[in-house]
Length: 366
Image (tube, rainbow, N blue to C red; front, top):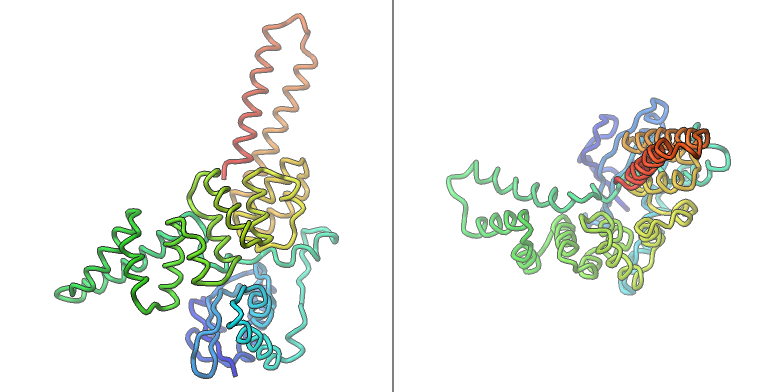
């Protein structure tokens, strides 16, 4: 039998830290997902999946309501576990877990209840069912490593505040965390590599490996290609350096997400616009909107922008439309200006050139 514990769910209709059977968790997530959707609201919480011996099998974040993707926990666990790359010796455990969730979930909850997306045309409804996925990997932004390090360092600081002195071992760890916050990760990596790590420490070590350019080492800790590729795409690197690392990673460990992120960096707008089945993080949604704007498909850009809570995405569309309208107006003015009035034409042409530069800035300002 499988068991689930939820943490950080802000809605009291699910009790945090309570040990639920898997079927209880499926029903609870289904009910709260439906309730939040009807209320037009969303919230997210972390969960952990255990076996009878309390061995951790899977962890993730579930999103309830109109920003969610899965109608209940069964669908999320099944989808994600199927996509996790495993070593041969671990494959039997993966298949066992998939069989177990099938056996424990009532048939009524295995049906994929797809919410109608009111602002999206019928041709898009079947294609956008996964769009609202919250970034289940945590905050996949340039600050992901800093956030992890800061949280860990703060734990030591709080501990020190409640004790008269810090032991030598604790001071060593505190120093290593502080050095990592300053960009010197080697000491902390060395300490983590030599200890019996928790799952959270494995995740932190993976982030540290990525910061050091050790992408394959990070992958060895998780065996989740999509997770590592998404974190890699979120690193604070120059576009060229990020592109090279993504290309190297994609060559040995290809994913749809990798192909998409590479196309974004290469500004291959046609591929970005055509891509349908990837983990839709906020940066990927923004890239999708940019691609449609570049291709002049304002309707599609608006449809995708409506599926994110990031106001900057809609602001980009508004600014793009304002700028293109200004350019169109200047071009019309240029047509009506006599070819003999060279001074006036030069001013208009300069204004058009400046506006086109602004337009590129709007498109690629992320």
